[in-house]
Length: 255
Ligand code: NAD
Image (cartoon, rainbow, N blue to C red):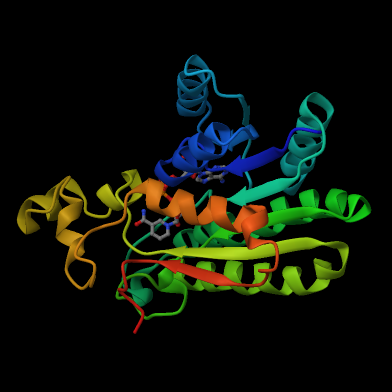
């Protein structure tokens, strides 16, 4: 039987690395993509040392031409991509009226347009093969107002809507497209939410446990919690699930 190949973006980040590791541990070959070439190479080398089938490809998802070249190269070197996980993301915090054009555009470019670029390039190749699965890692902020997160939430709402519409269009080809919406998850992104100065004032520097307030399950997610939800939606266990948004936030926005 042909090996399953997954392409994971943001693979050098907290959640992306956990997804890459879990899929590879389950026997999937992973093309690990990130724009941070150095950290990506370190991550991939570490996983390969553990005997996992991970190959790194440095690329920036905001460039449609780079994404086209990337997917072509991945398929030439490793074979057809069966699964896509859109994890690459950025967070720019600030009250909406103080956000710069650059804050807004940079956020939308990665979190929304990047998802479009990757999904278009991969799904166009899945359609003739009449099989495939896409999971976009969005956020619970897409559906719940959060202070200082207007650009981020808007970008995640766009990615969520895009992924669901895509799912409708390609369902007849046997391709499933789902969303995982994490809440606070202990990764470099969460730990970076406060600058050193504000963190010192608020005593939250490097203390993601602060974010557990308001989470009914009483703890911040680990990247592995999110990775398991992603792996489930990619798997045959979720074979009849598409256009679904699976929230993984300990109940923070549910109920
Ligand atoms: P992270 O900062 O650890 O990882 C994000 C990764 O994306 C980084 O390795 C970064 O280099 C990469 N990236 C950024 N821009 C890119 C680009 N243009 N091209 C390619 N790669 C790029 O963050 P994380 O917490 O692991 O976040 C992963 C995803 O989960 C993001 O989409 C984030 O918005 C989402 N999310 C995170 C949380 C949280 O609390 N950590 C909550 C909800 C949603």
